[in-house]
Length: 268
Image 1 (cartoon, rainbow, N blue to C red):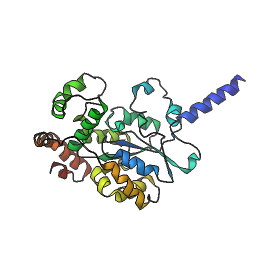
Image 2: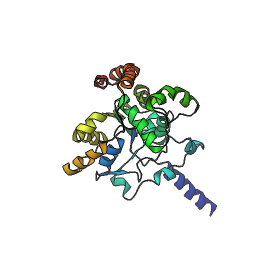
Image 3: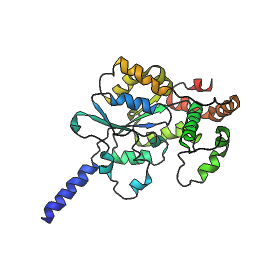
Image 4: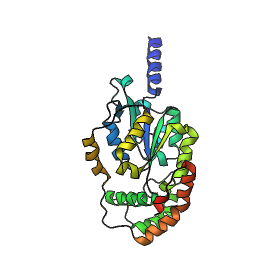
């Protein structure tokens, strides 16, 4: 009887450790991940998690034990007919979290990673507006930028996910960390502006990367464009935009060198 129970427990552990999820949409935050997630959900060969952001690989509490509870992670997925589908999840915090790439690699070293990059200037302002609307931010945008270093230091040794308006825009270091664990051909890097203006071309590239065929209907593509619209109470001041252009200038050129693509239009 005890032998049978041991075998059952072993099978449960092996099943828990077996990677179910094939790909992750890891960010950047406020860069169109909600829209791309909505598109991916429509594909007949793809099953996304039951909620958009599971926040598994960026949560330290889940990794305090030697063996994380992957059965909990898998509980967010419909596994009926699992062999027929690709399974994916979208949590933008994974790109920013220092420990997430290693944890993801330990779960599935063959994971495919999707990244969307947005102008870090506009991303920071969108991030701040979101935190204000949530009630998590009380400072004005300019003051929040000035206080970022001090406020984030107070969270050490952890990262501060709310006040990191500037730090989250350091894309080059985050991409290098992904490349440290995953082959470059397993990391797809997309541009927010192209997703916004030409979603079909982005989806063709994404589906080719994942190895699935087909596209959502044209009517769906038109419907989902509304997800790109955001309304702010006021525009960013010219002075603040100029400051951010100077702040991110070296980072943007570093990104161009790293990826071999043009991002200088972000400084226009």
